[in-house]
Image 1 (tube, rainbow, N blue to C red):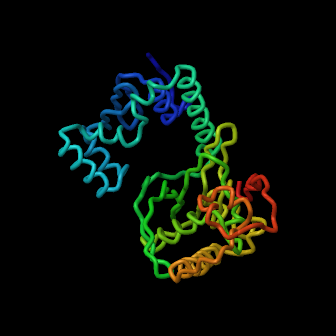
Image 2: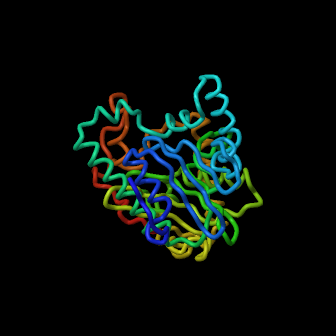
Image 3: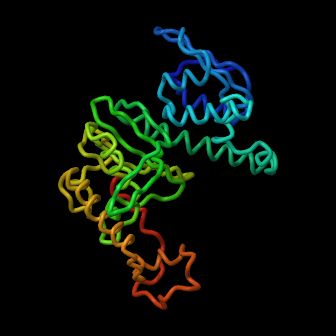
Length: 314
């Protein structure tokens, strides 16, 4: 496959997706007034990269660019050495569908899925990411902890961006519809991981202002972003707390205060053994695995379709 052109016509991210989904092998050369770089592919997987006279091996490059947290990278490197394989093989194994499972798919299914994924990613990059003010992705799958209500919570934040004019944004990826910001602040909130991620990030980096929190809706045919921004300049596509319907909070400080107080109370109640049968609504019961032992016989609100179409921050 030969591909020559300008990144003004097709972004680097889109080119990487095309090569990955097509399973091609070769070297991608990138030239600019600032220098030259190259990325080596083997059957769609990145096997090595080099920028100018910078790092030549994958481990040093990932470490230099901050593409992975240093602790995670060192753990993967040690795992690769113990297994006697290359770091790139560990990375591919952790991030890609097993080759045997992929080959087991009927060709029409594999082709359709590849096309769906490519279209979904292209939609996200062109309609959401390209329209944002400048930013740099500084962390993905970042390990985080949060002490709240007597509990110590551990999780991974899908993505953290550093904004060019200061501060940070956190993003959580969803393959289905995302909860509207108004539901984050209900008496029985949904979409709680966004608030937990925000509090953990604030505790871990108190000197870096969190200026946006968003769900990336990567749903085929319905790509969107939903969330809140501390100010209009942080992420113009998102509303501020004062602008969002039904949020009833005026400032970002009010948002963080609500998360800490309300989610802290929920955590404390859980730790205290509060097991009252109070589902948020009948929708919650549709996804519950404990129905055979549940004491609820009826709910005031009948099952209904999700109302998450109203994303408020989209």
